[in-house]
Image (tube, rainbow, N blue to C red; front, side, top):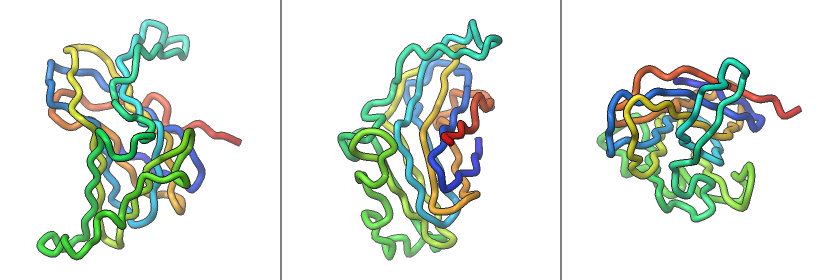
Length: 173
């Protein structure tokens, strides 16, 4: 699911159902717009949707370790490259992402990713084991250095049907 991130902190959430057990799934966040993006409080939660008609989603627990990035890169992989795949080493990857206090929505640290012009970036979690036919939400707080920066939020590993947006944004004002 692709979201348009703005320059204000907003909450993004996606609902997906697991098709089968896959112990090799992980959260994948993809950025394909140049700019600086900050994300925090990443959550991948097993959910109970029995009260969805009432507008309530009961989260049964976050399955992501270090979801608030308070321990830096532990449990996370970050990859940024330019469009020239064969010369990707020219991009100093450690200069394109940082776990830093100025990127935190809540707590001490958040993740800031800087995507070069015509570049692309990925952030992925550790492996997460899933239960078949269960619903999960993937959510995070995000902002960008300008409006309409594209962020794709989802799960890699092939265990999910097409995601449905539960809540795209929550205005904080």
